[in-house]
Image (tube, rainbow, N blue to C red; front, top):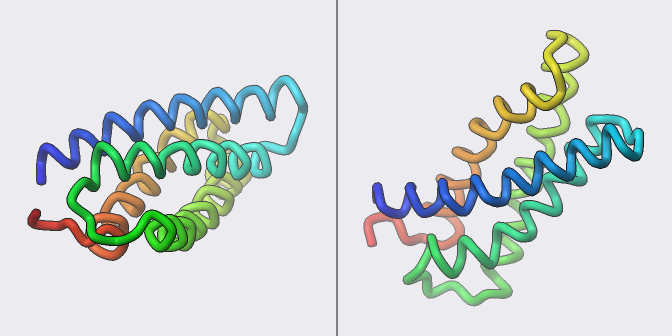
Length: 127
């Protein structure tokens, strides 16, 4: 389980770097509202995360690629709601910088995605 978590963290870190880059580009260069930018960046990085996670992290699943992706999308939709609402709360209500807020949120949403995929989607816990 620890090896899988480390693999997930590696995949997650690489896609999170993409997420942060997209967030910065969309917000600072294209002047898109940071909540929308964070949501779009999350969707892009989340879509890249699926094939990497399936291949390197959740090996041994018996779930088909199509079914797994649909469930991955549902799990990601909850993550998307968390990203948008927490970005608004931390930036507008608490006053944190949008990049710092996104890093904090990544820890929360990353754990949510990991455990939901481990136990619900790919069902490889204990394998």
